[in-house]
Length: 270
Image (tube, rainbow, N blue to C red):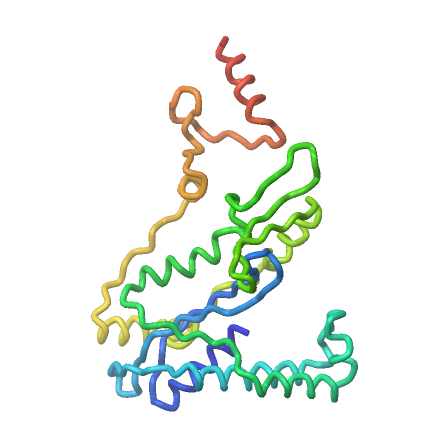
């Protein structure tokens, strides 16, 4: 899907003799933690021409939608022999003819393609997309656990009803839903195209940076300690009892917090 989404923008830009910079992010869940894969794509509002000048370009939602719709329906038709049909589409997927008829019905409808306004701050774009990659499918603040019961409650804002809904599920069901959104090893959730692709690094460094007067910044080094602090607001190497700096020596699982405190206090003679 990422390749198809990028191809739509690349084709529009190719017609205007422009090489854009594109990256895509795959987001797999909706607000109720259900499987809801969709693509977020960010592109420069223009790009580099064959004459190594910058040219601005506007993307019209209707044109993007029609090109995206055509490519997706063509893919689904071509891949029919390999598709695993869910029970809800058993009738529509009973034969290639019925499947193409189903696709044709949806092809005639308008599809949901949202083209947002141009953002001036690239950092805001990176932070926005980064949140989709790093945050879990369900925020901890929306979960409720019932002590002594194998049930987990989830509060979420429904797109359909425009109200807050409540979903109750077993622990096994919750973990199964959670596992749907764990990417396979090696699968890239972020992909780069145009002059942002690894193959176009020379164009990016020798042309794009110069004509856009972009100053290269050194990437910030990310450590497990820093990630832990940003996520849980706690320094993992700071003693919770005396505040002293600790040295990591190993990892032990299965202890409750009260047990850990008790072991430390006992060792300290408390």
